[in-house]
Amino acid sequence: MPVLAPATSRSMPRRRRSIAVAETKFDRRLASILSHATDVFYEKGYEGASMRDLSRASGMSLAGLYYYFDSKEKLLYLIQKHTFRTIVDRLRARLAEVADAEERIRIFILNHLEYFLANQKAMKVLSHEDDVLKNGFGSEIAGIKREYYRICLELLDTFKRSKGLEFSSRLAVLSLFGMMNWIYTWHNPRVDADAEELARQMGDIFLQGIQAAKAGKAAKKRSASPS
Image (cartoon, rainbow, N blue to C red; front, side, top):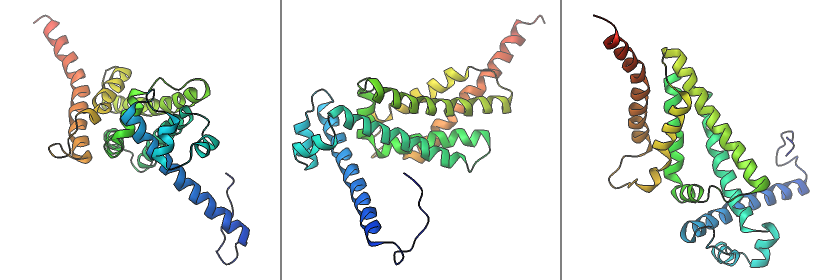
């Protein structure tokens, strides 16, 4: 969308004002439809859900739904795109304000957990329907995921250099995602901590673990050397 020069409501032409309002209403309507579609996919699974189910849940006629979304795959694509794009964009904005290598990893963890806990149904849909999208849809989502993975990999590489550590950044990144991604399956807000406290504890466990790799290697060298 082209960037327009700022204009006051008094100077903005009547037609342009009506277009801006229409776009805002459409954005809100789209967000509502995607939210209802997420609920349906969460309850029925992607394969079990029909366009008629999605129509009923969203309050839109079946013909109207097909007009904007030619298939339920398009809706799943939009849910995934919105989710991953939001996570990545929020992360980049937060990282731009912090230089410390350790703190940047902690921000990554907090950003991830905050979104996951606030959107647990969407997370289940994304985790269980990970390989459904094909062709261009699947390629675009895979590209955003690779971008997210590379950000984390760069954070770990920077931390490793700053501390003089030796460990596999790839293994560390995949282990970190393993800690974070399944939180929606066990988190109970009545007994478990909130996102901020969970991020602090996970950050401690993860960072202490990767920093112990160097200490363990040094101890092994000492034990192997002749006395």
